[in-house]
Image (tube, rainbow, N blue to C red; front, side):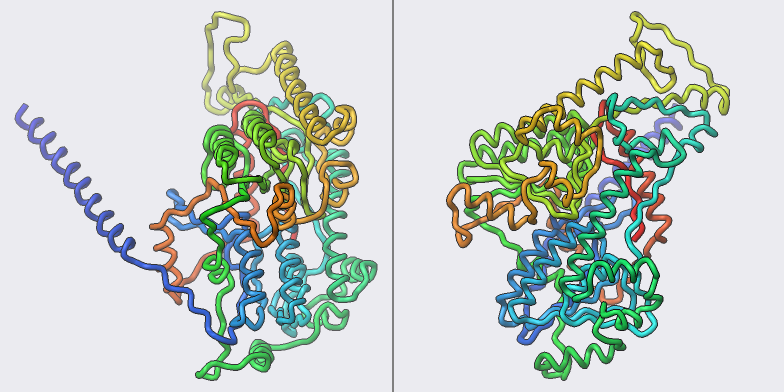
Length: 588
């Protein structure tokens, strides 16, 4: 007994000491960080903003802490980018922008909005010079807005068109003796999010819709390049089809670039456009830092922007997700705030939980009854993302926005054979009623399948009914363009899914005009569940001061495989019926 008491006493002492040490440690770190003031924004005369976009771009700037990897994850918000460009246009200290983009982690619709803002900046009389050793389709699409585009003589220049590739898991699941019991809306043949679990290749319906919206997105990109570079869409397609540009220097031959230069020659060009500092060097300033520091913070706001970005999930969700409860709370807060006269809902979501989508939809309906609600669609507003948007007074989207996917599905895996054949585990059960147990270890009976099928069809009927009410259509009309089908914005406008082309600024201006607020008097308040902790901001400041910081990037294949696995995990994590668009593996 004495040994046991001594052991327990020692163990307790160790635990208490450990806790005290941890408290002291984090207290010291917290005190250090709380005393760390962010460096003031000092922009000198004749400054050139260097636009590199070295972090992913979302709708809202935020920093989160990944507990699994102990890493800080950052996103630069489109709202900050657009405002930064707008401010820089009238900032006398800013002479121009140097576009030097290595990786552009953003959707095509987001890139389009940035591109249009840069075009406006350039039309003000300030210069934009674009240069890089290697261009992807996305980076060139953005960079082509510049009146001066330069390339490295022997770099890469990817101009081969868009493609989509999908992983199919059916064969792997069969080897594991796992059967995925899938229930789609009865006529939802285009609802292809579950096809990787059902087939070994794309269905005809999925191939048809994917081809159509890829063609639409590519054509919109080419139209923008045609406008900037003066090369016809037909000629651009010939260049892509024939792979005429093998290395970046050849882009000059086909008028997609203005010249071949080395980096030192680009610096010399930029030096000729501005007065150099006292050290005889160009005064560069990070655009990302400029944009975040110049972000508007209105105390007396009259227009709310509610950021709905990420997959739609039940409950509150995590950072980067749209929680049914947390998002509806934000909409409710904006509705009850009497100083807010109109609401802009920014939707960038492939959908997710049907129940969570319905909870958010209800709050939109209640808000619309007392103040205008205008939707701005980002890169994607499909399935559940369209569900929460359809009731708005007006919907803006980009020709490059992926939308629609009006349809639902349910997935119930059967793992009983896996446990029996691979592990020798068998399962038996007792139940009070016929359908008491619906589990992964019990295969659905035909009657149970019919019950769930009816539930899915009822939710689909409710979905198209709400779209019909919101869009002023007949339910048969919605069904004809629904059935899970995905549309590009350039086609969606012709079938009534959206009202007008335009970005976030267009939606804000529309919302303001509905309540007689002039452009000069617009004061914005951003509502988002993605909030950055002040301590994390301090850590970012420390990181920015470390000029020798290096990063390790995952291979492209590893990234895509992880994306696919995360997609499968997100489907499994939501209980109930889902309204989600297909997983797309972009080839860029």
